[in-house]
Every structure is written in C-alpha cells, then in structure tokens.
Image 1: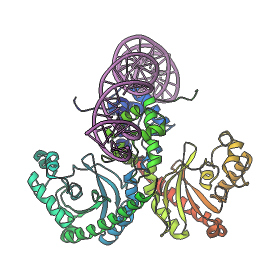
Image 2: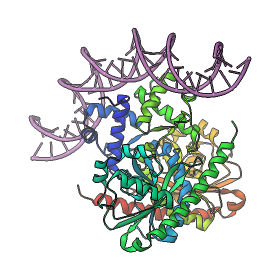
Image 3: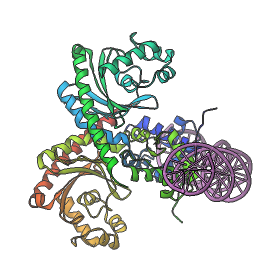
Image 4: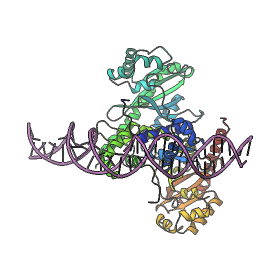
Length: 266
Length: 266
DNA sequence: AATGAAGGTTGCTCAAATTGCAACTCGCTG
DNA sequence: CAGCGAGTTGCAATTTGAGCAACCTTCATT
C-alpha cells in the first residue's frame, strides 16, 4: 500500500465506531462484541478490549442488560463544537423560512471527503421527522447540491476528480455524462447563482440548490430543496431563485459573524 | 493509580480532541500543533503525528492556510447516530412548545458521567442564538434538572455520590446542603413530578425541570426551564406543572417510538 | 541579504502497548 | 450436565509509540 494508513489503533477504533453507527442509528439497538468483531473483521478479544477503552472515554456506551454497545454521548458533546454544528444552528431558521415558503423538504449540505454530507434538514409540517441529519450521499456530481459545492473548483480539479467513468456511473439520466458537460453545467450554475437537477439522481425527484459562502467568499455549504417532480417540476427555476436568495442571506449572516469573531483581540 | 487508564493512544487522542473542542468552539479559530501540545502537555512531535492521524480519519480538519486544526466533520456524522441526537430531534418540537408558552429558555439535559449535559436548547424569539448545545455543567445536585435526573436513584447511590463535601461545594444557597436534605428534596420531586430551584446554582436565576422517561420507565432526560428570578419567580410552580406536562408528552412520544422499534423483526 | 526565532515535521532508538491464540468464565438450553 | 454462544483474560512475540535531536519553512528583524 502506498497510501499512508495512519495509526493502527485509531483505525481500528474508527472502524468500530463506524460499524456501531451504521448498525445502530440512535435507536435502542446495540451491538455485541462478537457482532462488531464480525463487522470489522477482527479478533473478538481485540474488539472487546478496544470497546472497553472506547467506553471508558464515553465514545461508546454499554447497555448493562444486553451487554451491547452503542455510540456514546462524548461524540455528541464533541460534535457540538464542530464547524458543521455551528452551521446547523445558524442555518436552521433560514431553512425553515424556505420550507415555509416552498413547502418542500430543504436540506443543508457540505462537501466532505468528496462526498456530499447532509448536515441539517427541515421538512414541511406533517412530514415524518426522522433523524434529519447526516448521511453521506452520492459523489457530488449527481445532485444539484453536489454540483453547487464543486462549482468553483478549477477545471483541472474537476477533471481529476470526476472521471468519465465516475460520471457515467453516478447519474440515472443522460444530461451530464462527460467532464465537458459537467464543466458547462458548473459554468451555468456560476452564472445563474443556483443549480437545478431534474430526475438525475433519482427518478421522479427534482431539486435545486444554491451556494453558501464563508467570509473568504469560498463555498462552504449548499441549501438544497428536494421534491417530487409532480409537485415542484414546473416552478423549479422559481424555487432556484428563491433558494439562492436564502443562501445569500445565510452567507451574510455567516460572514458578519466571522468578521465579528475576527475582531476579538488576543 | 488503581483506576484503569485504558489504551494510551486513545487517551492521547481524546485529550487532543477535548483541547480542540474547548478552545475552538465551532468558530473559525484553529489551534496549531505547538498550542495543542502545550494544552495537553505532550511533545509536539507526538502531537503532530497524532493530529495527522486524526485528520486522516476526519476527526479533525486542518486549515491549509493557518496550519491550524479544528474538530472535523466525522465527529458530526458519528454524533448524528447517538441516542442523544435522536433525543434532540424528537424533543425539539416539545421544547419549542414550552418556549412558546412560557417565553423563557428551555433546555433538555441528560446525565452523563455524573454531570449534567445539555443536549438541546430553545430560546424565545429574540434571544441570541449561540451554540445552544452541550456543556457539561455542575455536578447534578445544584440544578433542578440534575436533581430530577437523579431523583430515582436509590438512597445508597445518592449517598455514595453526593458526599456532604460535594454538596456544600456545589450550591450558593443553603437550602440543600446535606445528603439528608437532598434525599428529602428528591422525594418531593418524585411526589410533585417536577423540581424547582430558586437561586441555588446561580444568583438571580430560577428554574424548574421534569423527567422524561424511556419505555422502561427509567428517567433518561429532563426538560428544564431557566429564567431570571424577576421574570419567572412568582409563577415557578405553575411553570413546573407545565414543564411536567411537556415532559410527559415527550415521554409518550419516545416510548411509542421505542415500542415500534422493538417490533421490527430481525 | 543575513540572522534568528517560531512552528512544524522527520529519523531513530528503546520502552511500552497490542496482537492473536488459547484458556477460562458465565448463562442458557436441550 | 454436556455443549454452546458470548465475552473476558493471560501471555509471549511483535508492533507501535515516546522522546529527543536534527532539520525545514516561514516570517519578522536588522
């Protein structure tokens, strides 16, 4: 392997946490040692000890009845200090405003590890409120949010990351299949200030997104409306303009904050 | 040391994450290697390597301009799968209902590692919306939420944990100073279904809290109203009864969910 | 342009932690 | 009560991390 692999203990722990996260989803479910060992493909003794250590740090919690483990509160407490978390708390009112106006599910996305991570979502009144958060979705190219997030990458970066094979594999619709087409689409997004997507990621689903920027003007997130084609299809550009406005407002809020932070002495 | 200390690498990593979290608060701030090394009291070479590993896993992120580190998106993604996170997303509407009615800041707390962790907060309209989340506060005895959360511990556990010294140290007001007094107060809480506290944790601040339970009937969280004495002082018991109602509703919502989850086969 | 300090990374050796296996403990079940 | 699944623990070989010193960069100063 030429890829640097990092500390072994940490990797093991992350695999374990990831396995717990993927199979536990905040519900009552909990995984036993053997189960986890299977999932990560390691000795159960090793996993037993690793989990004991993680539990001591509060990264996982053990149900004393079941002996099962789940993710722990420490993660929650640490996550509250991430940039993403700050973004969520600031952005929520803006997302709600969009929902109030458009009456469709609105989410906030960021680009992490070249995938699109949903960090917050607001749904109109009666929609089932699940764990709105998170979920690493398709590799950027197939959603309007993803395209917005890469819309200011330079051409070389786009071509490097979005190989023709990747593009062909990602979408279900033929509109954007080559790097050239993608680059043209990105140019259009830059020009319009928002992106729309019609049935590309998923049949029957349309969406539009607009960029949120930090005080450097860099795109740090995208606000994204997702809706059934039947409901939003014919006013998609209208929604696009609206979402661009909301994203602009959020950008202003965000940058005024960061300027303020910059002014603090020491 | 007789206390088991756990894996060394993990402890180091947690210290680093904790240091970053405490000094970075989701803002643009970022800490350099030397700074972190100072904060955790370790060799900078060690910290440099540890941070590199953490960065590779996405637990921290590096600002390529500053070379500074901050907490990373991976934490956010993992945290979304914790019980606490699920609690937040379910509880938020109930908290908002309380805010709408009482017009005071309302928070949701859980007991973790014998401290009270705030997992969600909602403030009335114009209050400054900071990072409402988290923050390990006083050791349980000094707030109404803390007392609610331990209100069904058995006497032995209470006496073991709340030594007279701890009690004397925690509060600023003389009402509850001995284990006996605390136990009486806990009995009162059980009887009333809510707790009130008048200027004990902080002068000029009053509060009331009520327990939220899981499907086993165990107390898993507390809804807590905190307000200036001048504004809420004379209707504290009224607010207490109201918050107890809200907590009850949340409990019902929570347990109906968990029953549903229990029914899922496999 | 030279100097030097601050901040960060890398190489290297020795001490310390982890691995993997096997043995062992529980709690159940037929 | 034998056998099984699940989890924990002891131990020797091996891998990993700690600490130190050297080394790069960058940036401010003279």
